[in-house]
Image (cartoon, rainbow, N blue to C red):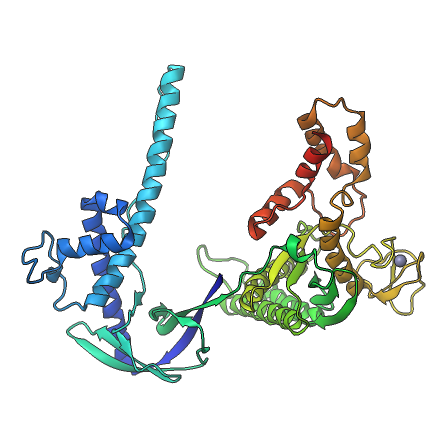
Length: 510
Ligand SMILES: [Zn+2]
């Protein structure tokens, strides 16, 4: 079974004095966590136990009961009558922090030892300069509410047991905005401070049947994949659904990139003008804070909207794989401050849309995401893979105008919207990758490799890699110099080894 966890964030409506109660509840929680962290530091052996055993052991060390009247480090010094589950939440939080701290300490010690051994071997005595990890100096954890610390939860309100600074009391708090989905496993809610407001965060866990790996899914001819071409202008995303055997089912054009970039450019221009009028910018202080916040919010909002539209479209057409291109390098742009800043942000937004779409797709019942090489996806014809002519309406049908809306293939007379053609190519790339792994390889590589003697397999792949960059056609759409690294990232993401250049070479020559 596969799991998808997300957090439902709810704004709260409460009387003003509650804010102080929530704050003292959190302070107490962090004091208890800090206390248990110290107890664990004093009894390092506890970390060898699993969480449940460690919890029992820690309670025995600190909690006074009839059978355990004199614990070694009593907790009662901090506050009276701490509820059992408040204590347990704190113990779990402290255990988590302690495990992380001691594991980095262990790594640090190992590195130090290795360094010293090396120095003795060489007969030198350069001291080890790596800094040891420091235990947390201040604690800012949000207090979770385990079962029995909350009750009567409904769509509009919840009762929470809170330490007000003087006593434990049940507070009724109204929750705003979103409803909780039914049928999913709900975790313990948490009171989280954001600025001067408090929010209720509830983790939701959804379980579903684990989807098959990309490679396995692509063996079925009827498997559907939704390929996405992300643009900087016009339509932010163009998606098309096709089956593995090549039937094109649907296309969707999402977002108005021109409007987004126009809005952003206007704001950036305003910032530039303000700056030129002020002349100086204070150090360590954000200038034009409101305008920057607005730019950030617009980008965030658009990325969320576009990514969820992509996932909705994929779900509607029952696609089980989302395909994106790898992001190329950001090309530095000439021009004014606002122009450069705008391109940079549009580029970042592509990355953001990919990130958001990945998790949203996983939540929508386990749609998996894959990425392919972006080279020439918009230059090739989706029907015959020849080079297309790209032009704008009313212009002569010749040459290649980057960013133009229409394309025609001189070989097979295919006429289409250029972005739709690109998205179809993106999808085909993924299919080609599993069906004919050697197809994507540049021809120069093969020719060069054949000239080398057979024994030097490693030498070939290194040479070949160096050759690979310059031998690409100069006019390509997205830069993808580091084919090796990106392929490895793909492998980690999907768990299935993808045929990258290095492994292809190995298969080919060993
Ligand atoms: Zn064609």
